[in-house]
Length: 82
Image (cartoon, rainbow, N blue to C red; front, side, top):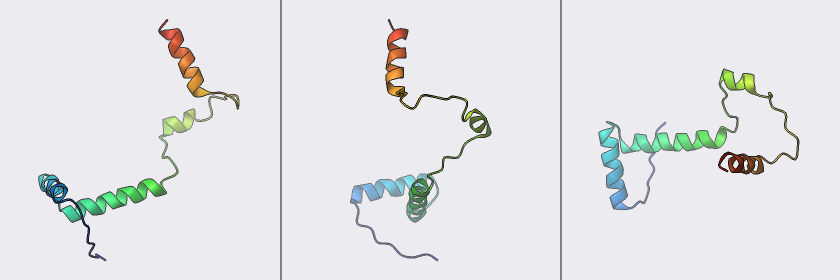
């Protein structure tokens, strides 16, 4: 069911968005709807979709609980660029 939504936006931004929509042969309403859906998906998609290859590699590395990845990266970069 479609419902009307009123937004108050800067006129110049609206014109830019209309041109953008026109170039893509779609409506401004459709763009806004897709953007809202995109935002909702990001918010609700806490589980990252993993490819089969990444799933196979999951759990291969076992790091100590106190392992600091940022510190390790700095050490390796310093060693690399001596």
